[in-house]
Image (cartoon, rainbow, N blue to C red; front, side, top):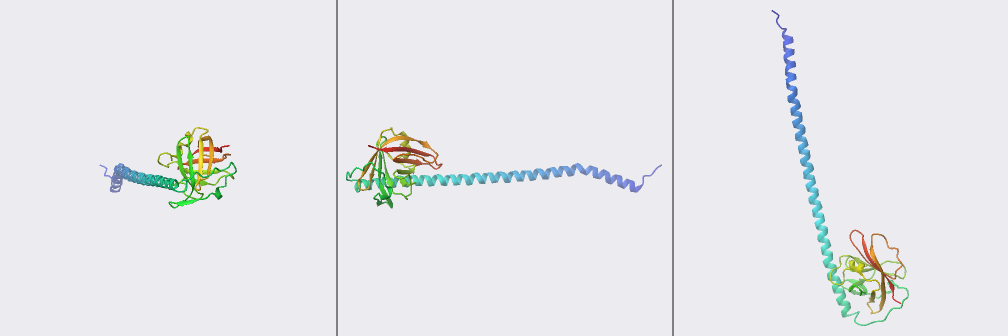
Length: 229
């Protein structure tokens, strides 16, 4: 009878044990990888939720700021118009000739902390807005802005509230409507609406009066006028 060599028996047993343990090790590695992937997924999920929450907070703060600016603009425009009605614009004033307009020479009236140059009436849509002198905050009050020589350009925001102050409605003005700019000393200049539209481009116009509103995305609603003869 042959008796196995002890060394060979031990070696065979060790080899069998190693072969038996391989599937268990692979299983443990798979479990560890699965747990790691799960933790990574949870971290990504938590990061995504945190990002969405932060974005919601930023958006909410932006909307709250916009609403606050709307309310402040509405109050300020109404107060300025009331002051103009009670003081500077009480008289009829004179009619301006059809010469070039010099915005730097306009008289101004300081009220509500704003240098006011006058008011603008768009009779075709019943709109009346205060006009601040150049350098004022156009997000609160429609303001004279830099333009080509001899042109009166007025910029405001689309959110002016209240009856007769919504600048976005200027695209609906009937062509040929009278547009009257009355200075703080009562001097008036009458224009005729000749064009209107919406654009996101820079202006390259040849109008005597350009009135436009601009939204948060840079889109402009505009109206172009020529002086009445």
